[in-house]
Structures are given as structure tokens and as C-alpha cells.
Amino acid sequence: LRVVAKQSVGEKASTVLLENIAKENQYDDETDTFITGEDPNNYIWYSGKLWRAVSVNNEAKTTKLVTQWNISAITYSSGSSTFEGSYMEEWLNDTTVDGFLGNLRDYDNFIVTDAKWNATETTTTTKPEDTTLVTDAVGLLNAYEYTMSYNGTDYSNGYLNNELYWWLIMPFDSANVRYVYRSGAVTRDTSSNARGIRPSINLKYNVEIVDGDGTA
Image 1 (cartoon, helix red, strand yellow):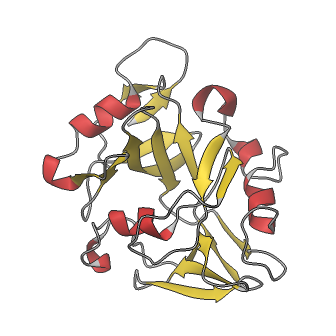
Image 2 (cartoon, rainbow, N blue to C red):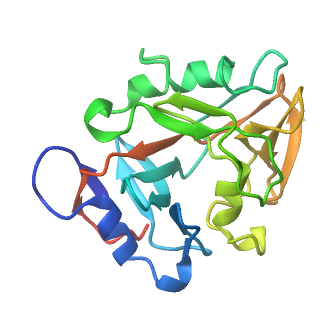
């Protein structure tokens, strides 16, 4: 699915996305409708990057995306496991050509720039409370959002398991951050080590599809 902003060319991204996903590959937790399964039709092309649609917010109709592949690999922070104020947050939301946000096309029209990212520490399969919310245009997935991609059953079958190492947004403790191991399991590592980055954004509700059916 290829998206466009402003021009009236088709249906809203959230509508087209869910219409092209089989019902057995959707899970509604009463806040968001998550896309699950091994390889659902949830590929989206935006700003020269291939993304996977993770969920649609039931009320706002925004669509959460994460890049299909690691975009880079950096240390999370100098030692703290907190996302807010970290190297990670700074690079993801840097609007210069050296940052990630600065390389997204016309991002003010496409993405929610004041999105809330849930960085609350919790177990991998438990929906986190709204305790630690960070407001940013770009964030990372938390462990709950990742496990919903395979609906908490077998991580080897989830579409987000691409056999790479990549950071999640949530801490494990004061010095360690959760990340996805190459097997697809969620584990932890010290924040001063370098792991891959799969940035996440939220498409605005009025972004429309130019063409495509969500297949790779």
C-alpha cells in the first residue's frame, strides 16, 4: 500500500489496510486492532521506506507503522534504560538530515507528531499501564505491541520476526532495555550496547492510499 497526503485519491489507509487483512489476522484489544500472523498484507510504502502496519487505533483511526528492516544500529543511551532523554529518542526525532525524522518526506502532513509512546515497564505479554508516556513524532514498539504481532502464541511465526536484533522502547530495569533477539524472543541488554533500530510512526487518520493491496 502506497500512501499520500492531501490529495483525494482513495480510501483512508486504516480502512484499506483492515479490508485487506483476513479477520483471523486481526486482534482487537478494545483500544487498538492489531495485525497478527506470519505474513499478512500489511506492507506500506512511505518516504522511500518499506513499513509494516502494526495496528489501527479504534477511536482516532491512526495507523501505527514500524520499518520492515533495521534502519541503523546505535547505543540506546549512556547507561540509563529510560527512553525519554536517550540517544535513541534524540536520533529518531532529529529533524536534520542526520536524524531519522528529518529524512521522512513532508512528515507534518503524514504522521502524528505528538504521538504518545508507552514506555512503561511491564512483562512482555501484559498490556502496559499508561504510566510512562513519551510524546514524540517517532518512537519504538513496546514488547506488548511486538507480541501482538503473533498474538502471544509463537514468536517464530510473527511477521515482525525478521531474524535481526532490534531495540524496544521499554526498560527491563534501571540499566537494561528490552530488545528482540534474532530468534524472535524478547530479551534484555545493557543500554550502552548497540542494537538495531526499527523506527515506529503513526499515520494520520486522513492519509489515503494511492494504490496497492498490502502485499510485498
